Amino acid sequence: MKTSDFDYQLPPELIAQEPVEPRDSSCLMVISRDTNEIEHKIFKCLPGFFEAGDCFVINDTRVLPARLKGLKDKTGGKAEVFLLSELEESCWEALVKPGRRLQPGTKIIFGDGVLVGNIGERLSGGKRIVRFEYEGNFRDILKKIGELPLPPYVHRSLKEPERYQTVYSREEKSVAAPTAGLHFTPSLIKKIEGQGVRFATITLEVGLDTFRPVKTENIEEHEIHNERFKLTKESADIINKTILEGKRVVAVGTTSVRVLETVAVNCRKLENENQERKCLVKPGEGITDLFVYPGYEFKIADALITNFHLPKSTLLMLVSAFAGRDLTIRAYQEAIDKRYRFFSFGDAMLII
Image (cartoon, rainbow, N blue to C red; front, side, top):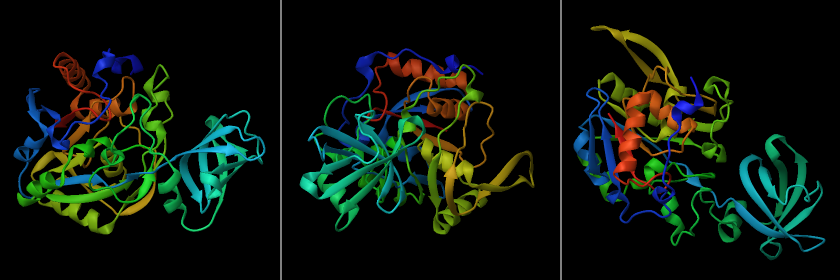
């Protein structure tokens, strides 16, 4: 399968530069896999598509204030460190600027000295090891001096940084938001729960590679990025109860899909359905390198809520695997024709 099969032409003005208010007023495209029909709704209409016993699986990760701007200790020159993942206490994998000039051993001063970064060894992909010196709590310091990283295609500053966090976000461990969840409001969640729909949380630490397009001609040759995840026993029990009752598991975002399909176990045939298989999930944590593209057989997710993704991206390939490539491309073209807003701050899609 070719990467070009997942390309499309997007007018630049359709790339959303800021979120709509309120969150649940964004457009919602509803796609039926059974009928291939496409409907156009508003996100706050979402509860009408679900019933008691269904389960929404949400990613509760929170975006870290990962961009640190400082000065080189000896020269006073400007320098920047972009945190990617925590390797151990006070030690991070990061991107640095200016990369070539920041030699190992260089010290960078942040926030008038409340934080000092020591540039370490070089890693693949232009990454570096950075070790930090500080007093107190590292994340408290980050909240004071760090900046929230916005996607590379967003060129306006965000008036309210909290709008790049979901209302149910918890631990700050990601450098990009699980954007399908940005459309939910506390009142909408309460309404959904009032219908008897369950919520289960997973945690997947979203990395910068989520924005990286596939550059190989054959998608099978693409090396998918790794991301850390966690599924608690409590959430696994909720998901398994939903499955065993014959209700729908609704993945909120491609990150939730990735975790659900990674932790699927014990697939078996249903007693009365010769071709259908039922799988359960097991709690745990680790690293997923699951690459989902057309031809993949989904084991857990019954419905998917997602945003509109970049051309030639692994996220678009995942959506195409779930809805079918032809239906997905047709839906994207219809979204363009109807002037939907794309990417992180854009509109949403529900695939049922």
